[in-house]
Structure formats: structure tokens, C-alpha cells
Amino acid sequence: MSRGPAKVSGGGTGLGSGLCPRVLTLTTDFGTRDHYVGTMKGVVAGICPIATVVDITHEVPAFDIAEGAFAIAQAFRYFPDGTVHVVVVDPGVGSSRRAIGMRAGAHSFIAPDNGVLTHVAEGADSVEVRRIAWRHGLQMPSRTFHGRDLFAPAGARLVAGLTFAEIGPEADAWVRLPPAVAAGGVGQVLHVDIFGNLVTSFRSKGFPAEAGLEVGGEVIATRSKSYASMPDGLPCLIDGSSGYVEIAVNQGSAAEFLGATAGERVGLTEPGAGGSALGA
Image 1 (cartoon, one colour):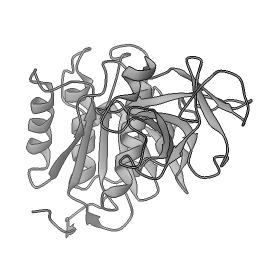
Image 2 (cartoon, one colour):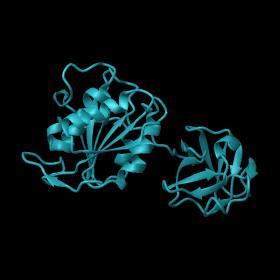
Image 3 (tube, one colour):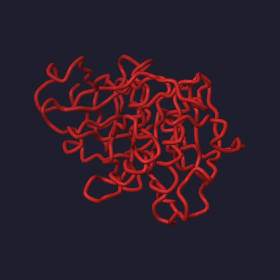
Image 4 (tube, helix red, strand yellow):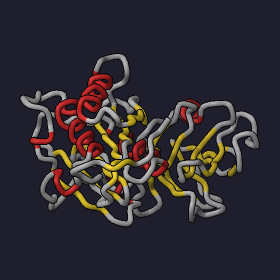
């Protein structure tokens, strides 16, 4: 059972409300085979034992910052205002990359400064970014496990009552991923879900009614309102729950059908464009 906000003596939430949100989420590329996720939860419990810890995912492909950015941007807005989100997809651990806290709207984020919070910031009404001071981490940190030594403790301290302003000095700049949709109607596959659906970087809102998408020389031109209404065995376009146009096959894998993976080029096509048309 989730706890409602409760008063915390001597501190706020980082949102200026004087209330502790109690909810902390974890998004990583650690998987669950090793001890890493459990260890981070142990750190959180030691600092704020009343926190509700929620796993968003630990199956982000290893080192894939873009996939981590997609995952947290899709999930965070469905959590209560005041939630603290710890995101650890960190191929630069131990290097000169910085650790940052971000306040986007009514949510706070703790992450490496490598672009993993790009999509979170894109849709926010207000964004504040600060560098995380090492004093909020564990003593004698390692150079290989900052999820345990810095990100988890900093997030737990925010949940326990540390104000966002106390997390560290304001950051004069922070890393952003390049735009997924470039000029000329060229985008990419942002994500391939467990069903093999291809989530493209084209937003559903404003997508041209008669346009198709080209992947690997194949043009997908048919749009469907649901998976069940798609023609059997053929890839179609559908407005996905993510807010992006997806390419899907009913009870099949569009990724396998088209031989596509995350990062694949996707081109916007107009009616009558060249290429081998599918589902037209």
C-alpha cells in the first residue's frame, strides 16, 4: 500500500511543500541477475526506511543511454507529484562525467550527466538542474558503482527531506541527446518493445494522415486503430500509448519482419513514394 505524503521535521521534499513524497523509482541497465539493484535498495532503506521504492525497469540494454532516456520519460509522469526518480545508465562511471539532479515540474531526478534525462526535460514546463555534491553519497565511494555510492543515497536523501536546492550548485550546462527527428522527415526507431513493436521518433500528434514510414527499403503505409484490426501478418502504423507512431504486426514481431533494431533509420514518405510498399 502506498503512503500518502507525511510531514517531515526539519526538511522539505525539494519541491518547497514541506511534505515528504515517500516514493522513489529506479531505472537502470543492471538487470536482476547480480546484486546491484538489491544493494541500491538497501542503501535507500538505510537512509529512508519508509520510502516506497518502485522498479520502473532494470532491463535497459547495457550502456544504452537513449533507451534509458525513453524509458524514464514514458513512466515518470504516472507517479505522484514529488516522486524522486533515480536513473542509472552510466557507461561513463568513474570518468569526468558529472552527476546531476534535475527538477522537472513536480518531479525530481538523480542521474549521470550523459543525456539520459533529455526527454524528461523536453516536455517539462520548468526545469532546474544542479550538480550533485559528493557529500550526499556514501563515504569512500568506488569508481565503478556510483548507483550505490552516489545516486541511490542522493535520491534517498531527497525522499527523506533534503531540499532540492541543497543537492548541490546550479549547473551552468548539461548534456542533451541529439534530436531524434531531423530535418527532412528522417527519424529513427526509439525503442523495440518485448512484442517486437517498433516505436518510432515520429509523434502521433500531427503525423500526416496519408504518410507512410520507410524502414530498410520497405514502406509501411496502412494505419490501424488497434492491433486486432491489422491485416494478418503485415506491418501497420498505429498510434501507440507512448505518444509516438509505432510499426506493429498483429500477434507478431515487426522487428523480426523488417529486420529492424533500435536506432534504425526511419523515413517519412508521401503517397506514391518509391520503395516496396507493405500494407498499402
